[in-house]
Image (cartoon, rainbow over all chains, first blue to last red; front, side, top):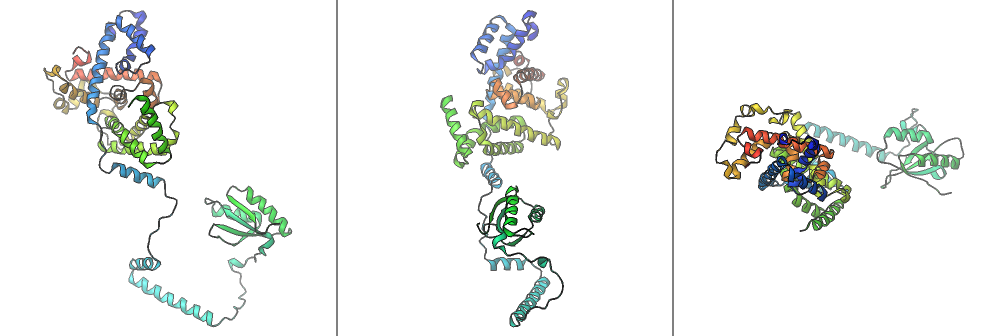
Length: 231
Length: 209
């Protein structure tokens, strides 16, 4: 086809035009391109042949269009299920089970010996609770320090802060931040996720609190930090 | 419906989808998946891969509907670009798992030995002296030949001759320069002509029918 072009000075133009023929055939060229193709076609038998070939190809490939794709049964529903999976609903799904039902379901899945052991354990705990209630004597000072009694939390009225941490905050980041401000969590979280943090230190309570407040507010993982008691 | 009406309608539709309107999404699905699925079935050939790629395409359309920019082209071009990308992804995965057994995996087809390599070719596209009368025989030969093109060549042939896209639109769909589209279609046509000549349709190749 191309070999029949004898005018070598026009070889480049011929090549450019021949490359455009498929879109001349499907009628998507700009009007300027269309005119250029038509001018060339008048003098180039090879391109007229190539155009015939493109038109035949257009016709034949279009004829196959009868075999349009049909979605298989349930295709759209599966697609929507995928979408739902990727965009979770904001409210948690309720199971609709009562506490008693959940416990009995859990027990059904527990082997019999384990069930008996748990029952015995529960009885022992109940008996101990009873003993404690009946004899409310103060516990003797055993002389050792538990994790929670390392330092008594200060009074929280002046040095107290209300803090809301960001969900992605790690335990490590929380610990580092509390150490940094010399604070302890003394209450919380509330239903809104707010903790009460008490600040300890050598400074006067209000000064310590304001310093901690500045540090908390500057921290990327703190959503909210407010004094418990306004100045 | 005129082209302008379709464009306005498409824009409203995709904007509604961007607002997560599921009814609009179903309309978009019904309007475009038959064409997208047809194109992907030409590109991929295996029905399961096609269903998966159509699913991936529409999922991406749902997630990215807000990014559609009408000044960059038609909605169908945007969707075909996603479809082509997803199709290639499925194709690459299939190739990685060596699930693709056709000639697609080979860099080029040895035209002299095509029939020897694929005995079924003779059965699918037998030489028939009466073929010039009509399209059926030629249609069978064309299908056989298209299946033997590389997926790159098959994609441009389908987009140009089957879907009637302009070459700038094909450049958007394939995400490649305009000249690449032109030369790729040129070479795909030559290869197709050679393949058709192999099974007795030399007349088609030279357009003397």
